[in-house]
Length: 168
Length: 168
DNA sequence: CTTATCATGTAAGCGGTTACATGATTAC
DNA sequence: GTAATCATGTAACCGCTTACATGATAAG
Image (tube, rainbow over all chains, first blue to last red; front, side, top):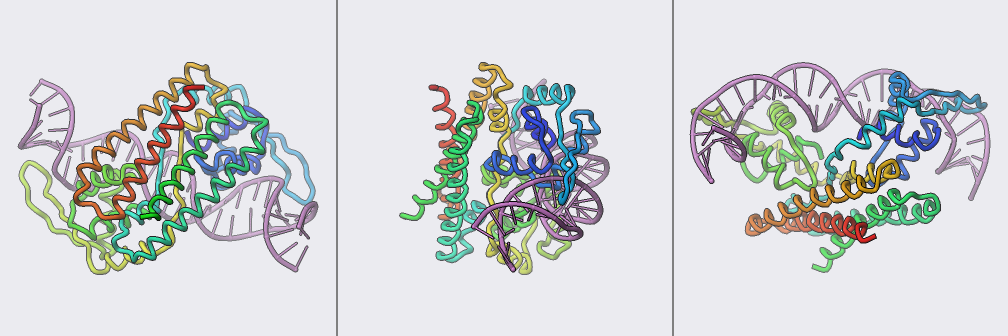
């Protein structure tokens, strides 16, 4: 699924602004998808042109007016089609593993630092996700709960793999 | 690291053709990087223009001539710089988790199929990687071994997470 | 007799990223 | 007084994917 479709998915539950869509993707989907304003705003414009969403503007002072997007019937239909289509392969891209693979060109202390840094990065993400999960718990559907669980387990497995290497 | 840099990394150990580079990335890096001919051939051309690689053509009959690429001193230097630079964040993109997240729009048997399909996809990748590992074992450096191990552990953790959901 | 392997490439275009621009308000 | 949050967007460009084109040889 591409950005446009993910946005439709979020809008199928509630009306949202470009800003809130961006931050929702960056928090709720942090462990399996990403977004930037440079993607979201043009995507919303394009979705509007497609007839999949409509906008209502809310006047504000001190800030740009809020543009609240709603999904249309066509939009719902389109998203429903997409969610029933075949799942695309997961993508894992790791610059860390690339560095490790070519580790014979590095000194031992550099490799140790590589591993320690990666451990810290993942620990941070895990901590964040676990604390988010507590906050989200009350409102989560089964599928959402499954996703978070999956994410946490992946992070933990990665930490384990990193720790084991240290004892060697 | 981008495609061009990864190619330089491979060339720093041995001379290779575009074809063999493509297939090496697709097998040895299968679990953390990907390549296509549409990326590799233009990248090699560009690396040549940069002065990071040189080519030697080997005449063949029945097939296009083999173009064997060697890394230059400049190329080695450039790759060495890149490998000492900061590691970029890992990227995990999962269309499967996206589907699960929006699972409330699906029937129970569709979700079961989603999970079972994902389980099979990952099991296939795990089997492939484990059998590859046996074949590679003799020639692997510590870092390469670490990478493969990491990959296998990730796949196993994902399988575990999928199996647990089934008992519920 | 069909599939996999070897071997080269191109061209269009997608789906983003990165960096920039603007600025009030609130919380610490 | 500094940082985070809210809130909009644009423009250039990147890096890659997808699909196509060609075709002999070997293996099963």
